[in-house]
Image (cartoon, rainbow, N blue to C red; front, top):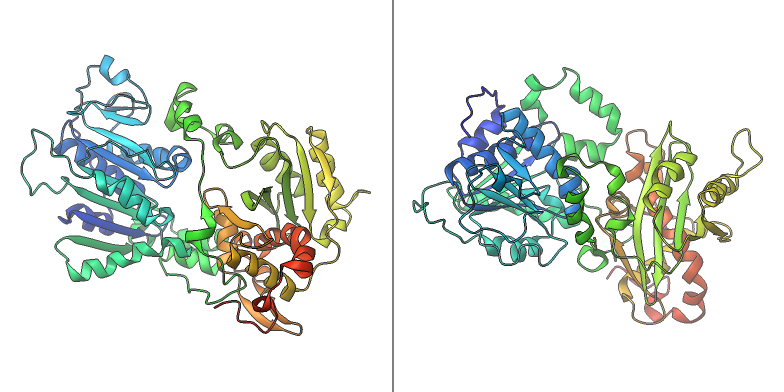
Length: 509
């Protein structure tokens, strides 16, 4: 697999390529060339360690299939390595093509990238505890590391980084036992662990490289107005600064959801048997959105109704999907469309296709009072229009009366008590699917609290700022609030309160 193609790398990529450290953490803004750099490290690991076993790790198998594989393939194409010639994905075809086999031949090839010289990269997802079990690897590459759980990464991936292929015995090979991480700047609490690699680099620079860069070092490969163009696309200080300029977002201390704890309240639960079986329907690197639907989810009860909650606005319409399962309230998914897309698109292009195969087509519909406004040139309100679209798609819809919008202080008390008690007492525990609800989580983690005339209230100014990406403003957090308040407020005030729940108690302690 010799390749003489001339590639012009940008300065950040060159620093990474020349670095000899075994551990490399790249925190790159969008447009900086992460995918090309990861593809380079994959190709070099293959070249220098034939017949070795490596790992390509993602937070979920859905992420690997929908994003990581496609981006890696594009980077390999740019470097002159081509699927079906130099490597194959998710198939035994390499054996028939005369590819060498790795020192340790896998039993299954569905989650393998098999190179012609016998090196393999196994696709490992952290949402499956058994995904990395039994592997003896010689190194790994982690994509979108800030989305990954540090402990799961250590257990499922780092513990496997121990094999020494029979033909590779020199210890100064930079790819043997290598750890290569690439990520954007973390925007949620759970991802902040990646930044500790900066201190590790300072303490032992011979072992660890920590490199931050943004697309200003890659302007030769980008349109001249790239940053101005992306500024308009983001319309967001927080996300633009984090994902484009690599500026760490400020931490919201307290906020409107001070009891929200990523280690307790977030989870992932995908059906990886379904996702791994997608190799039967076509090339894994060319799958489109049709295959990423509710069949990939394993956290819903198929015999129960879905609870949907909608927030209506001119700039964005957002929706969360939840389900009350005994003593656990699960937030399963979230969707949004932004102008010029309209409310109809939220259902016809997002929710309805995703849940087309859901067996119990019953919905309990929640929303804010804006849903009672009439659609332009129609006799229907927004809520009625949405219900009509759902019924036409075969769903039975129950419109739930949420009454007037509650006071913020009441929502604050109820929801944070539920988060804090975590299922103790009469109120259910709350769990949020972090794989499906990234935008909701960002909205909640960055929702600030301010003093209002009736006490604590949610700071809604982000919804009026032009420079805030609206899926990360407080709209999504409102869709989280509506059904919880409607379902549990009366239970809370009648029998669920204790002394610590009173307005003067320090709920954030």
